[in-house]
Picture 1 (cartoon, one colour):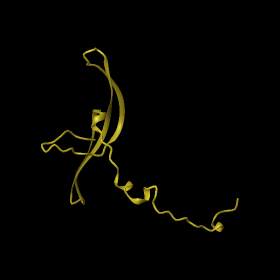
Picture 2: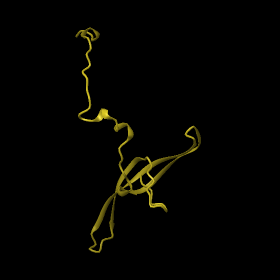
Picture 3: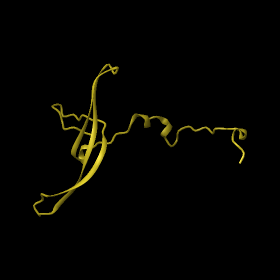
Picture 4: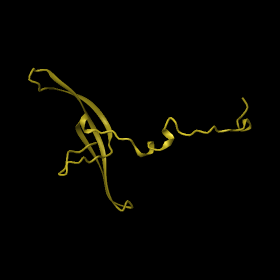
Length: 103
């Protein structure tokens, strides 16, 4: 979830959970055509801690009417290792047949 710009024109990215998606039609175009869009209800968790150890407070917020443009998808760190590359080194695992039950 991207909050609006701050004074330094930088985005503040926050993890969020999408809880609901709904449609909204508005008659706002000059041609009197309906503008169709999806809006979302999201949940975010705000936590303030000292040195990552002592949690001062933790709150959950539900935010409604969030447009699709407020979302930015980023790659999570656990997918950045070489193990997910197509040309990553693979070695065959050799397991003896005796460890499996007979059918």
